Image (cartoon, rainbow, N blue to C red; front, side, top):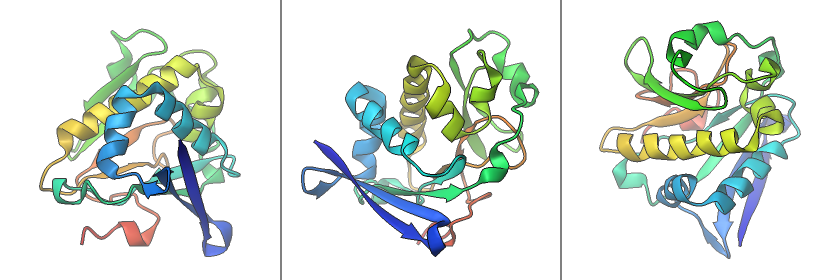
Length: 195
């Protein structure tokens, strides 16, 4: 059975979480695999995020390489009430053209230094502004599809160069999970360093 460990940081502005299976920490590689293939784990993970006390949050993980994939998986949630604005699907509209409502799409960002995993719009649009809104209100199958594709994208991207997996959203009011070559928008300083 999966369990989580929670630590509050910076006067409650950040929450750090880790996942255990029994009494052993779950590795980053295990989480990537479970996102892809285990609906029970995805449900546990979604519930863990939904249980955050923050109305809106950014989600950040430490950098990972093939050499560090067996390290214990952890992440932080950054209290980000500023993300609770009107969602704008126009920023990614070109990627939604041939997609069905409730789907999920993967594409490179404009600078080609990040892979984006993005849910396609469905009604109501208010479900898509940030990760907390998406996981609390969007259709459950789409939530699972998002994490399945995040797992698959991470599996393909994992290599000797670090990848930073996160959500940001300050510049684009639509949920997008980022697989970055650098910690471009990271707010949690200890995760910015690849060493």
